[in-house]
Image (cartoon, rainbow, N blue to C red):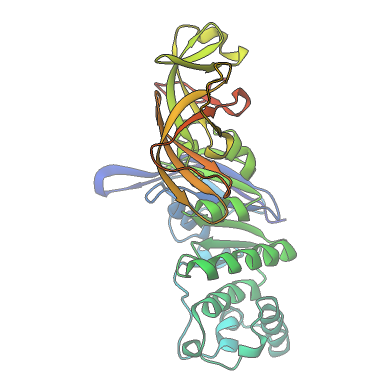
Length: 359
């Protein structure tokens, strides 16, 4: 078993007396793929480095497979790590780079060859084993780094932004390959990224971090669809969740002279302000007609951005600016007047002061 448990981890850096991790607890099940995602400086890499043994916590514990490893050096923790930089040796051929960890472990020659060739096959590097890194593309070099981590057959695999040095297309291709490989191996994996799409597509669970703490953790689509606080909704998604302030009044959300239906769960907030959130893809648009029975709120198009598979609109209404994602066949232009449908089932509600989701 290679479950990872961190309990009440605190790490404070002397400069500015800032807590990089603020009493973090996290359980990663055996064989689970958990992604830590968040903006720069949120503490995700510091947390990973404490699990790896590259940083020592001020307080709290790290356990791997039920064994307390908090004070053990990295080499005794039974894990391997892939860094943001490839960190491969330019003077060694691919074969020796993949087998470097095995050489340090003094693995016998026959087993060394078997493990290196197995890792190379998994990463589609068999034809490149006798080349030097300078003869490889960036994507191939990153594969070498992952193959080296896999070859040592560690209990836990740690990855710190391993795809960030690749261009967009390579990152997309390698992301799918990496997910396949990790699923095939069944290795417990803790992965750090700032890329939301990467986090959503790779992880069994996603932990969104902010200011040294885990703001929310859960299955990717659960976190996306039901952000537990405004920060999470505003961080995950491209575009992020739209937010507007409204007054709850007799079953409606009122913004200036416009209103949309409010769910019954907001009854306790009658005549109070709430913060409402909605995803761009959940808003539907229709042209404004003379039909007074039309539902929805009025808005004006400010910007239309075709992205190929969709059109991203920036519209303005009484509640401010909204991002709306429509199908590629929609024909709109700046200045067009539209009616927006904000379905009650797609709205999420937050306390305007704390930013926390309302029960």
